[in-house]
Length: 222
Image (cartoon, rainbow, N blue to C red; front, side, top):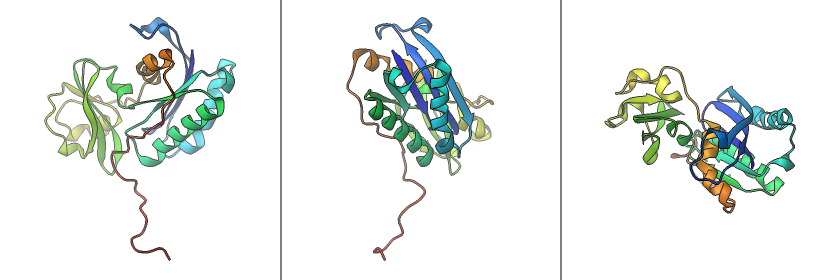
């Protein structure tokens, strides 16, 4: 099964083609193969870069849209504009190709690769972070958003993610200094049970966690 994976929930604009084999149980490295990958760190470049990245991945693999069997998209949490670009693109590609699309929490693309008790934090802008706790790769509870200084006591051994590196001096736990972004192969792995079972296509629901910056002006329309 050939899967197009997309994530734009962070400042990393990402697209990949991932080949998936196996039966959905006990997947290992031999069941997932990264065929083509594009990433650029540009928090304002999602609109301009994502579609060309998808085209480049297909060209590198010698494939066309007709060769893709499913789409997996990171559904956030993430800033409104960037996240919306990725999800709309994923849904449009799947609809045009007549294939299913599945959503995965973008934080899980980082947290599912962790060991021990980890705080995963990405940049939410407005001097805030999107965050969630993971115990040996399993998320505890739902993603949250707040200022780094307002994070509750988590008992985490360390923090990881773009937000963790950006606000390392404000966190109550040691933070990885290099920013880490959602792993597209991991997103496909997390969606694998649905993919291999032929589950119905999903309506992608973004995890915005807050209202967009742009709001309609108060009062009646003029």
